[in-house]
Length: 252
Image (cartoon, rainbow, N blue to C red; front, side):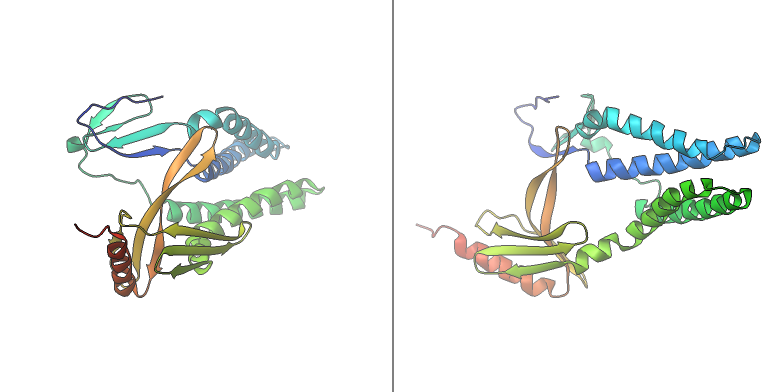
């Protein structure tokens, strides 16, 4: 859906859905649905409570596949005057006082993953006492719960440890070596127009570029790129400024 902007309005950013977040949310939904379905069937005395797992996972998987392109393709538009929702509704920026989150997503994911893995172990123990190999269905859910917990705790750490930064008098380089992704090397030219967003601190962050990444369906997202959590931030920022100044056209 294309949004027409007023002549006096300036586009700040456009945001679309993120495939990784979409998948993670559906994994959480499938996990919650599995626990609920099994609990209901067990409370009813159903001897085949494990079928609740299969049904919940299948239902969420079908739903996720069916609406993926629509959900990920939704676009939020932010201008200097308003926020425009995917449906076209406008919210003046002066009316947006503060953006709140219900609960830090990483903490929620870690707690839920640990609880779900524990529930899977409990269910498998009951299934083993009943005999047969039905307990093996719980291995999938135990693995999902453990993965959610570990992902929430170690994702940012792995990204930081797997990233290396280099700055020359012409370009900034970011090299990464991440599990399941492999090695990548990207370069970003530094020009007189390069925007510098400096976040000072004991471990500083310097953003100097944005890039559009494909996130599924027709959705794309503009992602900030920079040197994140570096110990020598002030010195690196000064070097960035000198490079940008040297690229500026000489005054007449």
